[in-house]
Image 1 (cartoon, rainbow, N blue to C red):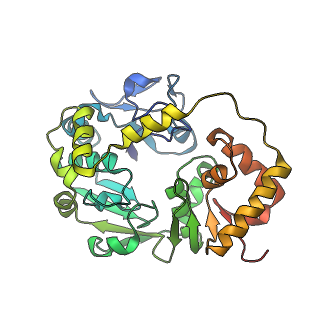
Image 2: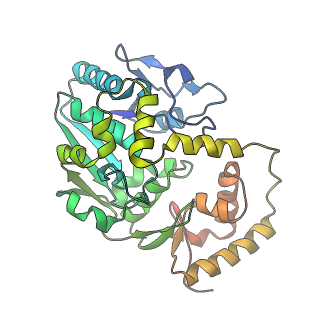
Image 3: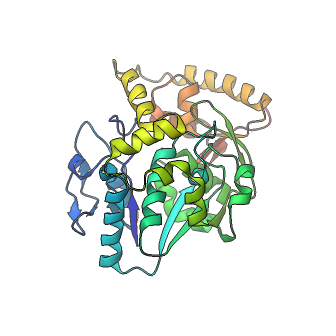
Length: 334
């Protein structure tokens, strides 16, 4: 199986705003004229960073790099080359959460550009593409109830057995949506507080479901995807995003990156962190929160994103019973 993926990580992993292209890596391998694979031995060239090489080292799939810098037309060429070279039985476009089904003007939408660009390219591909949405609402953008009429049949209900092969990845990978999808597949239910604004994301019985959705209908609805079909570079895509959605997520990253840096953070004080954790949990319980992510805990406990794994080790070592993999469980008692 080939996983065609962006190299577009959180700033804590990659401090350079926007997606990475082939020129940002060393050790890539040619697959087609325009497509490179990311083997385990590859590495992003500093100051950029990427989780793809480590994913390639820990998972059996072959990871190929999406290069979005030539717009939708460039991505169509890459997809056409892959289909011609691989002669696949199927091409699946998978989105966790369902924001790919957005119109583009929703107030809660935070990352429309990447989804719209992928949707536009897949709709132009002269090969059948199945659009799949896993865990509706779990990305914290469009609520599951807003997506109900946009989803087709359930094609799979994820279980603990399905997510077991990626358990080790979820111990370090910063994706909150993937963490909540795995937790829901393992039976977690309740309300999970995530990073940023800390908006609660429901963990419900539909969380583990993977739905099929109509690709053409998604394109008709998604105003940004429809507008960028003929784009030839990422700058054009960004400008359409600003005009249609009111912002570009890469602009947001540029703003955030400008606030990063500074001196190294002080070492974690375990006693102080655990006291702050008690205060946060007491407040969260009062708001009906049952789970949170380690990225959120890093924020609310006043730590840097680079200290997330150190914090995780501290909490699992001191209160292992609270770990409902890969989330932190906020018990209903004291």
